[in-house]
Length: 266
Image (cartoon, rainbow, N blue to C red; front, side):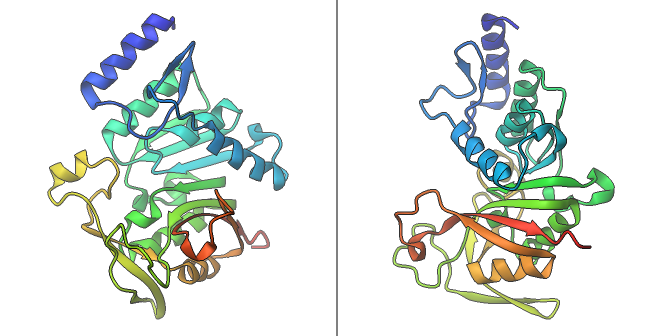
């Protein structure tokens, strides 16, 4: 496609589905999905470095799952580096934007489907070497949070990347109006966390709230130790934390990146 054609087709997407709200993807020439100064490939570069640290220098050998892929950043950028990727996204507007970028970039190894990530299972989508769960876990309520971790374990062969909010034991500030620390018992296991009220109440409001849950009115942010507990319970034997800014005291950080390593002896 020429530069003018890309701009024209991009405008058609905007006219129908609205502007890009999440991901800045380079479409060629000097055209990006978002007209902002923030270029997000640094996030992909950081994850690529972690993959290299685990011996994955050649991404063409990987099958990668991008859960709640939003406008497609990770599925698209890793496909650019040769991986076979699948993005699962619940909202049509986000999905169409991702498919548009994939088509402009002619990425035959990237695929996108519309589905609720809670429907994830190996029979439906197969298994993946690496799974990315970025920005979705803290939008689920209990017990879906734990069910979802179990399903991610079922489809992940080796590495699970989780970018999520966690509930701090002591809240010096509470910008998200989180509830008091609560206990939730499911299948004889107890988990700690705080409740968060999601945007939108009607189906129409939920559909347009692109940065919110698909249908649940509240979500449950696991406390860090409970997240570790759930991951260990479902066969992730080692968990590493990757801090965006190591200068900030850990007890003040409520959003973290976790790299969970699957038990490969099973």
